[in-house]
Image 1 (spheres, rainbow, N blue to C red):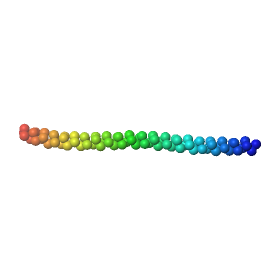
Image 2 (image 1 turned 180 degrees about the vertical axis):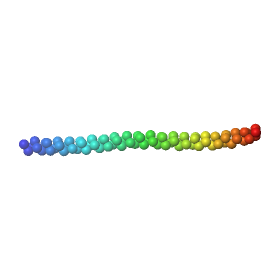
Image 3 (image 1 turned 60 degrees about the vertical axis):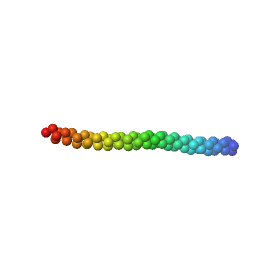
Image 4 (image 1 turned 90 degrees about the vertical axis):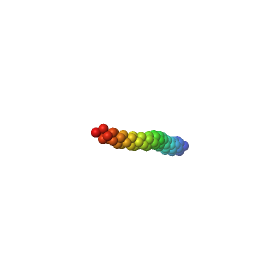
Amino acid sequence: MADNNYTEVLLEDINDKFDALIDGYKAVRDEIKTLAKQEDLEDVKRDVKTIKKVVTATNEDLKNLDRRVTKLEKAVV
């Protein structure tokens, strides 16, 4: 009977260790998912910087065009 109790204790200990291992695996898996999302965010940040530069340049072009049109309108009048 003592051997049976010892076996049960060992099995319970092994089950606890497997549970801890599974929890660790889940944590690592969740961390990997988060890292993948962070990489996506870095791509988005780069894209936003590019878009910002293009919009700024377009705004400058529009201001320049507006000045030129204003000059032409004044010259026609």
